[in-house]
Amino acid sequence: MTLEEIAIKVIEATEMAGMSYMTVGAIAAGTHGIPRSTSDVDLLIDIKSGKGINTIVQNLEPYVRFSPQVVFDTFTWGRRHIGKSKFEPPYGVELFETFDDPFVHSEFSRRYHQFVPLLGRKTWLPTAEDVIVQKLRWGRSKDLDDARDVLAVQGPETLDMVYINHWCTEHGTIGRLQAALDSIPPL
Amino acid sequence: MNSPDPNIHNTPGALKALQDDIYRDKILRARHMTSVERLEQVFSQSAIQFGMMLSGAMYRLNTTDTALGWQEVRRWLTRLDRVHDHGNYTIEKPTES
Image (cartoon, rainbow over all chains, first blue to last red; front, side, top):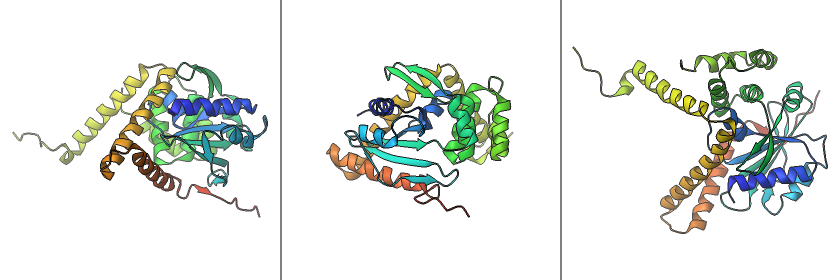
């Protein structure tokens, strides 16, 4: 199965479960920044909606093998369900649960619905500002690169920098934001 | 007058300028695309990347067996996941005191 076929299955499984979601990770970062390859389809799922994540996992059973072990990220203690495609290539599927966090509530409330011809359907995506804030919050090397790329491609002059500065202040990541801005060459 | 050092790695300023040129080109190319075109390019780049990984795995195993190649790619990705996830995830949430 191709990555787009897996993405369609994951989106369909989520919608069939009646759950609100948005596509995150490299797909979202590439939408607003510089596209890069990825091995995963990542979704942030509103656990207060629909029939529950286990229904999504069941819906995907013919295509994706999920680990029975749910893990917590050590930054925010959000829960993550990890799956691998049963077909080749071995793409990953990661389902992140929403949790009680002001920024998560904010980014989810600002998501938008975009038609993607390749997928033949609409998908929910985070705004460019929310990708930047989230990537700076995580702070792994590829996250910092993604944040810088979105800042560079969109341009601070077109972004809601007040919003970005607000959340980076809340998260203590203003230094990362400034470093990302400083590393963008003059265009 | 000295001629420039042919090895750019010996001239940090020139290396930085080259890096900036390459990055600037990537930014400008992305700016000329729509958000949907960029999103769709994630999918096409990923297909190419996995094709290259399969090719590399088959070469390293010295095999023409695609199934063996994919098995090796899965092994690589499992290792990569462990490296990327190290320290970032845990199976237990600490109890609040």
